[in-house]
Image (cartoon, rainbow, N blue to C red; front, side, top):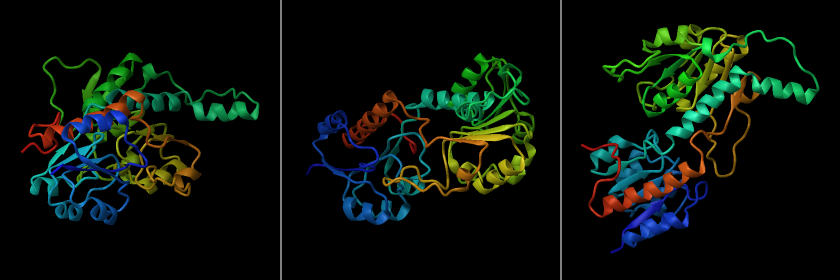
Length: 325
């Protein structure tokens, strides 16, 4: 009997010929669906042996009902939308791609830092109105600024490398960080409060867990400098979005630049409304969860996730397993 592969997010992230060719090694039946709801997934893909998933949710009740499921292959890095604990309990391998967009997210993070530092949104609006402002109050060269990095994994290290090239001082907060014997120059591990109070730019680059959901709220925003910028290319749920809106409107912090959101579903196949409070704030830069995007990254997301499915269904280990035990 040929294996059944449920390829989710098939409308918002369509399959490619190369992806199909990789999967053809196991001669599968491929079911393409968006997977916008639990009901859709259970109805269409209940008998799947493998699931490939980008941005849909795969919750415990769905996983329990998929009795033949052997592997969940995430076409990306974060697994916060997959109930990994339930998959592990059911003996299902969860594979992801921790390196597929490290360079892209680091580049985008630095682009947002530079955009806020050079006030690009403000100056672009000025030239469209036909005038050149003379004041440079609040603008500083990056070499005299401090960057705080929350989450010092692959992407955090890549951002630090780029920021060091601009001469920035780096503070890092990561509960899992282990200092190397040859301490990295100009990089200082600190506690969260020190990072927030001392940084000119605070970047969120950590995965979302049950322990750090809304780790940045009113209390933490009030610790930051009133001239500081908050940059988030990690996960939207790391921030209490209502608290951030209030902080931006009342001058608690100067600006923010966000690529990820809790209250805006940028993956909705029919588009999304622009009614979120973020759209009423001027001192914020918004991009629609594109920090991981490049031709190279999205090709890797499809192809390497397909290779992980083939590996597991042929009895081998995938390139990276989220739940190896």
